[in-house]
Amino acid sequence: MKAKRLEVKEGNITIPIYEFSDGRYCVDTLLGEKRKRITRASLDAAKLEARKLIAQIASGRAHEEPMTLAEVEDYRLAKDKLAPFKVSLLTAVEEWIAGRSKTSRVITKSVREIVDEFLVSKEVEGVSFFHLEDRKYRLKKLAGAFPGRIDQITTHEVETWLNGLGVSARTRNNYRNAALQLFRYARAKRYLPRNEPTVVEDVATANGSEGAIEIYSSQELRLLLSNAPAKLLPFFAIGAFAGLRSQEIMRLDWGDVRFEQGFIEVAAAKAKTASRRLAPLPPVLAAWLLPLRKKSGHVVGYTRNDMLSVARTEFCKTGIKSEDQIVKFTWKPNALRHSYASYRLAEIKDAARVALEMGNSPSMLFRNYRELVTEQQAAEWFSILPARKKNPVPADDQRNREAA
Image 1 (cartoon, rainbow, N blue to C red):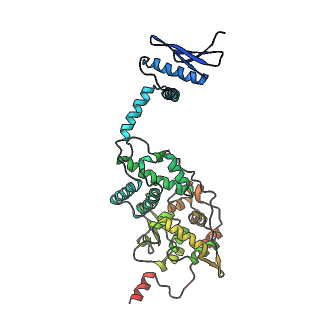
Image 2 (cartoon, rainbow, N blue to C red; image 1 turned 60 degrees about the horizontal axis):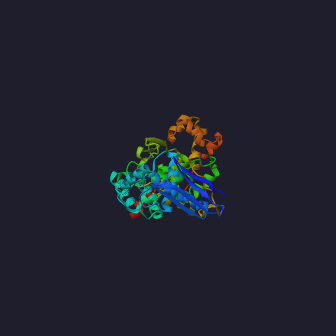
């Protein structure tokens, strides 16, 4: 019986394979001026031999040592992977070599070394104290998670680290921004390849939606203020009665609180919008702050957001009493600023003025902060005064008297 003919074809080269009745397969073709016959026990093995011969013929090396099976398979797989890009194997290899030589010019440094160098550079630049503290805190965490070389970190690893922090979307984005700033600094210093995106740029930002807007009731605010320790009280009071952002409150010095003029100056360097504004200092806020007033220094007793967050959380769990019972207070994200916007708008009915006080546009005020409250509720909110004490004495005056 005549052997059955099969074929393996790549490009314009065809190699015949003959199937014999006894189950063997024979590759039969001319290789140069010689006939090449290879017999194998299976069709797959015969096909591999055929591809091997095709590779030899296509490369014009029929007279040289034949390629190994592994080399033939590598060649086939490489061609398959390059096919969608319509790039030859030679071009791909040349581009890889060029990239390899460029990468080799990178100066190798660990993440921790670059973090330390970056922080020194920021200090020399004269960035604000609070910005520097924020970068120290976030980037030290990054260095702890990635002790090796910065050029060996992948996008997937950065994304996994960010997702594992267990923080809100906004906080996750703050960590991403800090990491991105570090990686771009590393690229500028040639610790990463020049003219290439960093791996952090491929990490998507998280959805910043924080859920439904919530505000506090007057009863809740009274509990918060009447129990707050001196290091936290200014943070709560200014948020509730002046509507400043958390970071803006933490950046305030006592010199920014103008008791005589009735306003708080939020300098451009301390404002989120980098634009100076004057926030109101109503009598109710002055009443809470005057006993704590100092000649200088930070208004809030914490200079880092993480430290303040820990102290606030602990206070809300164990530090609030109502009728001699410990109350676990529910902290609502950004609710002091939400509350101020809502109660202030109900009080003065002037959206443009409230937006200006808060450093927002009126449209953002309505979209992000405003909750409907009544005039009566607003009047209750802005009448929450501290309990009267006999002969209240400002903190600095009290210390001067004690020293005398």
